[in-house]
Length: 235
Image (cartoon, rainbow, N blue to C red; front, side):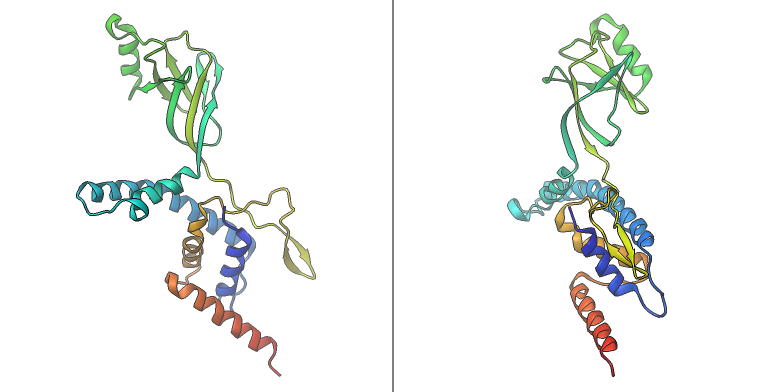
């Protein structure tokens, strides 16, 4: 997780000005959550790009293996072996599912997903291709999964990438100012790998019209804080 308070204070430090006015907590919340979804979708593109480079011998192994580092960030959202609930004739997918990794029957028989209902029916109806417990097939139908053979009604588990939690900087009003309140029931830090903190800040700032490079971030914050200090203590 990434501290929503740290990101929020940094963004406010660099965005609030006489020209822009004061950025509201709701504006930051919308921008941050938009950034989170953008970053997650880029992970999959980045893994494929790095794999192509590896296959060409352009990427080293170990800690320098960028595809492994991206996979580590993706693994932050992995939920393994979650039991699926049967509601005849389907199994319900988890409410927080984003992408399916695998579905298993009785823990060791992986479900092979069909590309269409036609393919599912063809495989299910031909004697030579009849699905078995040891070789089950599945079909995605919106937020449900149909599995063959039809005798499978339990002991089905799923491993998947969940949706990110919605980041929310919560506060109370004290003397007409927002005071951070992490005890609120709807408080939520930013649901990303901790290494993405600067990336989140920079992308959020960009949505408010401020373009900085990572190496300029700490300098910009320091300069802004010094400016505010000087203004507050001016005679």
